[in-house]
Image (tube, rainbow, N blue to C red; front, side, top):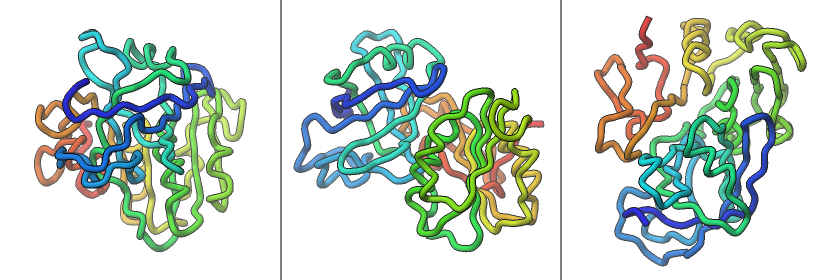
Length: 263
């Protein structure tokens, strides 16, 4: 096992849409203490921990290929069971999708910064595609009910998990099979809100930031290919008004005021 990683036992690993899977795990060997200061709550690790917006580095293979672990956001955390929602994109996630209950994964985390759960005012969440993953946990954890906007390509998934935590849900699909036909940004109303949390494709988040301008404060969960997950390799940097920052360490949640998008 890689240094700092712990084993989780798979409770379930089910397909919820085309190439989209939900996996649930419990900690294999609860630890009374740990010397790994990278991990939040490392002095007493009896179960998985983490805040909305944080992630784990996950690997389900012993071979050197694939070489890199996969960063996956926490989608839910309850009663010691952690849930990840992930999209099968390459070899690593394909391997994970084939694992069965009782199999184990190696995990490092929680890593990165999460969303501010003490935000006040009129709040909306806007997600695109697999960007819904961390927003499920966020909607559940906020101290107030919010509006939820979610865009998908064709298939809608996992919205039933947020229904009891939100006031309203707006849905869009590119093919018009469910909800509005088009992009979720085309029906989003930024003037109605004080704070917006967003996660999804970069073009979507860039458009959200442009739409909000001075209307609402924006916080976005950025995505970058990661190698180490702890800020050592500098492989997941983005441009900000304060210079280069690491998505895995200073993020993945950033204020929209600081992120610089390439034109």
